[in-house]
Image 1 (cartoon, rainbow, N blue to C red):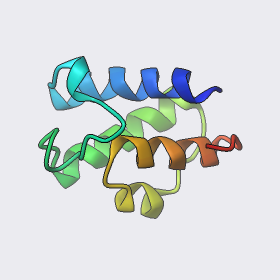
Image 2: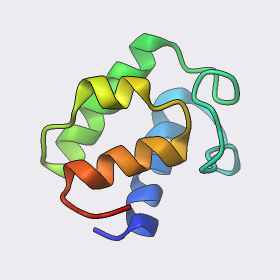
Image 3: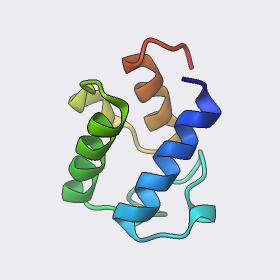
Image 4: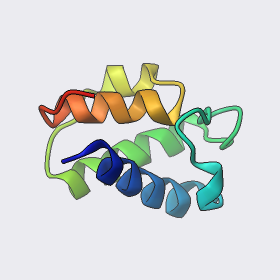
Length: 83
């Protein structure tokens, strides 16, 4: 999966779960500061993405990812694609 395609999936899921506008979900957006996500919402996002992408995701690395772009990098790594 290409980075742009993955970012689109991530954006769609974040918009749905975090109830934010698509233009707010940028690579530099902070999940906590910009998208106002709490820890429960981030766990739910990870679970939805696991199901959507069909792979297990590294929970600790995702929890450490502060921005959408960093989160995408972790997802790409889990999928075996270089960021």
